[in-house]
Image (cartoon, rainbow, N blue to C red; front, side, top):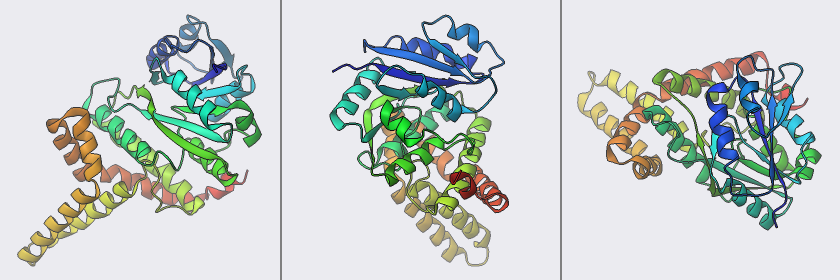
Length: 333
């Protein structure tokens, strides 16, 4: 009833967050686990930090990316169950217990996912925003999620190895999305457990929030065009976010045309604003439930009035990248 879980953590220059991550793992209430840290040729103090803990340390001979690191950890693991997380994530004491019970209850054909706790580890506004946004986006379809993210993914080792693992010659991110879609095509089940939570250490400023949105949007766009699911409701690439971006530019257009027909375009502007509020009202409720009215108002302004800009920039870059080198070429390798 408590089979060994191999916790696999890829690491590349994560000295700022790695110690918190490992402290949390080793504070687990679960009593049968190993921790495998796969270092991807870090150039900081990561190795010194890892050696302070009773981890199994695997050092890759050349920098190969997070997918290669996770695959290496899985191949050398000893437990029948695997739990993937990241070096900037902080597990709860019961995270491994919940993961083990969920896998045991659902069997080897199921992949169990967790998500970020609504409250971020660091207390900055943009970190709070991101944590709530991801939590809401990844849990709204818990019984049939489109993907399971590697910040909290539990899977039987045999299932993982039989699938071929994560693609190593791939986009810099979204290997978990491609892996999830590949499992869905072979009749595996994805299940999001909203009680399986980790805290993420974001340390986001406005610049880092924009940078993250550009990066995610770029690769989501490139992959989604290749996968022919650009308009799917998929995690943070949600219908709400896509609608928000469209209505943002429609509202800007109204503002530029107000001088021509003030009554018409002012009315249309407010119609668009209320439409956006209606579409995104559950996300706004999530902001409120996590941090209260003042935060939810600030988050709403940021989400409606500023966040579409980096998402658009990333989308345009992703579309250009697709034209230069379609992602389906990587998907077939």
